[in-house]
Length: 280
Image 1 (cartoon, rainbow, N blue to C red):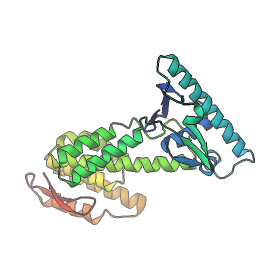
Image 2 (cartoon, helix red, strand yellow):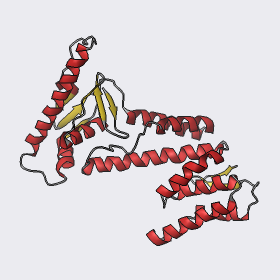
Image 3 (cartoon, helix red, strand yellow):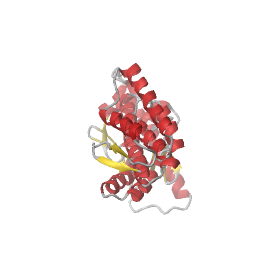
Image 4 (spheres, rainbow, N blue to C red):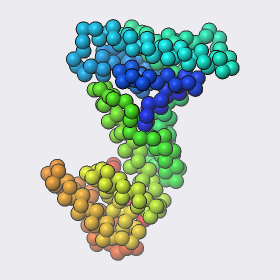
């Protein structure tokens, strides 16, 4: 089974889609797919579908959705064999793929692919490369991890409590990987190449201090000190107006460094872990 959730939901068994079009079964499959090969409690599925106000028939209705998903899986298994694939020993059935277990359900991927798992693997390798000082390797690995995203997670699924929470969690992991990939690119002198991307990101994440700090550094190292200082002033105005906060001490120090430095002088910046590094 191949699973994609970092964008639109796509679940395929033997290359054939088993993704339903109906909203509620789609929610069920989305939550099972995200936690493939793990038991998802019935209570979590009910909370996802009815957001704390389930009908008396909730369990029966959930069972109906599971049956609908198994019907799609069974069709995919039959078509897969019809396309010339050899049936494995002890032929896999729909109940083997979407398994009923005490207290919940499990989507058995059968060792297939998952874009979330691959993202976590590549991002983890990228973080380790950063820690080891291999900035070109880190940039490459993190760029590869981020390429797995085709849009917001579960972009075409109407999410309830559980999926909304998971979507926010996944978005945070994407932002962390993006932050580290940009830092790696800055470390290897790709400041000019980053300017277009950071212009978009600073507009999209208007209160994200680290992205704005990276934008300031990229502008400064490109000889655009005035624009770098403008970025700081716009961020400060947004933070004060929307959150009642001043920029962090680290960002204020970066602003002062840019203000006092000549264009050819490396600017000292602070990473997320408050470690001083030189970028330039």
